[in-house]
Length: 361
Image 1 (cartoon, rainbow, N blue to C red):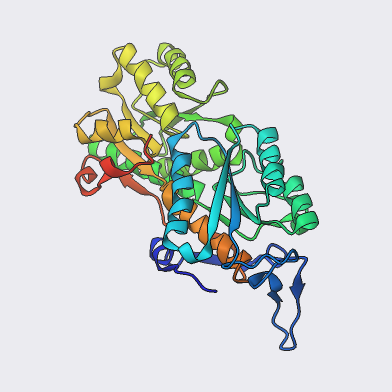
Image 2: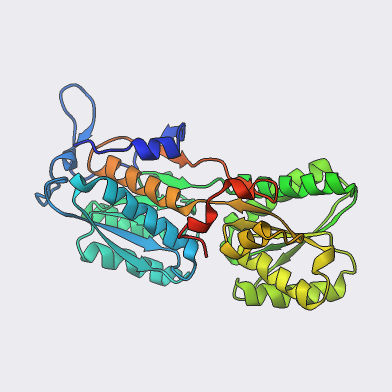
């Protein structure tokens, strides 16, 4: 049963890249027909007699955190897929992992116990959830799609998820870096001082974003000074503000602040406002935040850009990939590349209908 997928094809056209994961779509019920093409009997019925498209199918969503509206957008994207494909007869159960790996693991176990045939998991790190996915896949044939946070198995055989759907984290940093470069060029600054606030607990994601940002800036301005500050507190506005308050006391000149996400940069901005230094510093956000976009829309000269990740596209694409691989037996690529990140700036903010994006925090 092939369902409507035109919308996601338009959202992520040309997105399928890399080689297919040979083991990722493996299923204990797979069979080898006479023509030599492997198909899975789960296209029609699972080992328990469940028939996709005829019986109601429970799909799980283990969400990194529901504290941030951004992840609610990923949930919205999955739900949007179900609305556009009612023939699938999908029902969802979403679980909040609260940024905690043990909760993330428990969520997967609880979802399988509840009868979930497939799960879209937004992990809290790059490795710790893998043994649980392997165990549940082997014991129950549970199908997984990983969203947002790429996994790094020690053994390639442990890559039991059907595909990974996520944004290119290096590209996000590069896009933010280009916003900074464009500003420095227009301002004639040849040796700018930049503060970049990373989040060490986010592991490779934080590393990749900083790598992309610093690469673009230093290629254009080799004499730039980039000060990386790691927010080891709560990873929110309050902890970022406290961190930035200390940086402002130490650094007499700061030309620009960027960071891992909007919470970090807004916290830094609030600290600069409190120190009466916001007028001398420019700020670039990453992810998508209503407050940042309002600043840009209103002409707040401190804010020069917001780099977007669209979580609705992420959730929709992840759900589409899960259904195609699980219910239709379609072989998946190793990774779905989502559309390249966009930067909203004072020059183009009027072109975006951001006020109606429900996922904005």
